[in-house]
Length: 110
Length: 116
Image 1 (tube, helix red, strand yellow):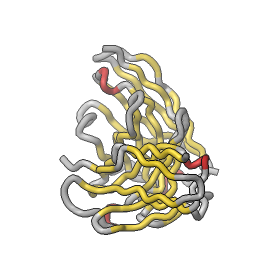
Image 2 (image 1 turned 90 degrees about the vertical axis):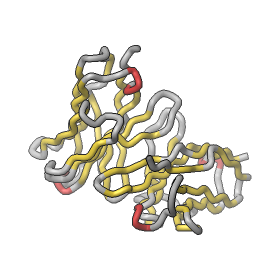
Image 3 (image 1 turned 135 degrees about the vertical axis):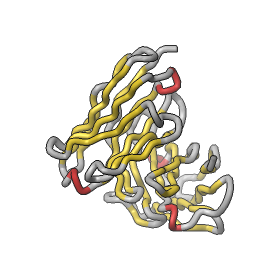
Image 4 (image 1 turned 180 degrees about the vertical axis):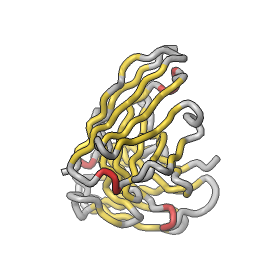
């Protein structure tokens, strides 16, 4: 069974840059997996930030960007703000209509 | 504006059944795939099921296959999830989402509790 891997936690200073990654337990992530990055603050519904590797969803600030770095999908936050402190979940399309979410990364801004 | 409003959550005993609904507005419902994603208390997101725009294609996570059924009524802009024989591990907030190649538009969720 394929597992989508993410860093459990990360921290960044206000104004700093951080890159979160999304990998596979076996194999490499490519654009064919349509990587999606979703942000969730406690008690709220998730919100999609990035889809199809590097497309920004409607209304998402341009400090959020997506890419493929090596064999993983990546979400980069440039100029982190306090309000970016959230859980971040990547999702990958496995084909045949199936999506798999990673375990999430808890981002602390301090 | 895309709006998705889930309903139908609540307490359901193991072996019972429950049907979740999701009323959609603000977009042409029949042209989009739709998904259900759940989140157990204190845990991460888990994709549950998806359905194509016409309703002709359905997909399920192994954890719910054979027990849950996704469907849609395009004349009423409504998505459904029929939950049969639920288990304690199905306890979660269930989110309805419009799914456009990973550009999820999310509802606010409905809580389903299955006591052990």
